[in-house]
Amino acid sequence: MKENDMTEQTALTTEKAKPVLPNAQTVTLVEHYTDTLFRFRVTRPQSLRFRSGEFVMIGLMGDNGKPLLRAYSIASPSWDDELEFYSIKVPNGPLTSRLQNIKVGDQVIIRPKPVGTLVHDALLPGKRVWFFATGTGFAPFASLLRDPDTYEKFDEIIMTHTCREVADLEYGRRLIESLKDDPLIGELVGDKVRYYPTTTREDSPKMGRITTLIENGEVFKDLGIEPLNPDTDRGMVCGSLTFNADIKEILEAAGLDEGSNSMPAQFVIEKAFVG
Ligand code: A2P
Image 1: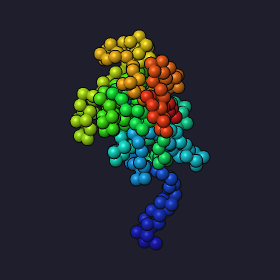
Image 2 (image 1 turned 30 degrees about the horizontal axis):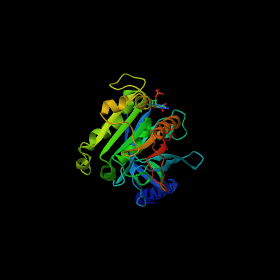
Image 3 (image 1 turned 135 degrees about the vertical axis):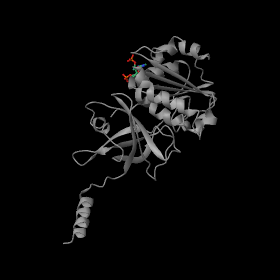
């Protein structure tokens, strides 16, 4: 056998041995923020159309040959060529303990079936929209903040983000900073976005849970605006289950009703997913 033939044969064998993942996409960027937080970008499946704020199932192939999938909010806007995800690293989490080690060029499974309630269709028009996030619950808002519809629908966008420590705010802070210079939506954004980051376990310019800061009126005083009003204010919420429940109570007490895709109203809620 000539050397050339051998090379070809080896190549064929390798090709055959490589598992072909269904719905596999290629990782194009990985950026770690802290020991527990990172973002990554992947190529976008051609068939995937989604509305900003929705989530998809993503994952890796498990050792048993079955895909290990979890729900992840898409953090990139619907016009982006790639998909972005913002993730927590759970030390013993079946998926995130492995996902945190992905590198550029690796493959990630993306099921191209987006769903979710944090979408503009589920909200009635209003003057001001509040995006309430804790931790990685910022992800769907990273998409919505880059969606032209957000700026066409509302005069004012208030992005609140409560995290334990200052470093946990980094992803959101950079995203907010980048909006004005964004070639596609920079002009639309103008001065419409008010960013209100708070921390609960490390000193920062604004401390406290957003729920407390609403209840004691501090957030309205800080921003120089009137308290929540069902005629003008809309809300989108994404955080832990207890956070979502607490905000829901506050919004309902202020007279806002929860909406859905089939019945738009004044606020919508999605759980921040942990894998
Ligand atoms: P805290 O430090 O007081 O618990 P976690 O990492 O546990 O998901 O929390 C992320 C952030 O959300 C933390 O700053 C945490 O504050 C805050 N948080 C957790 N639960 C609630 C809640 N029910 N209402 C308001 N903020 C909350």
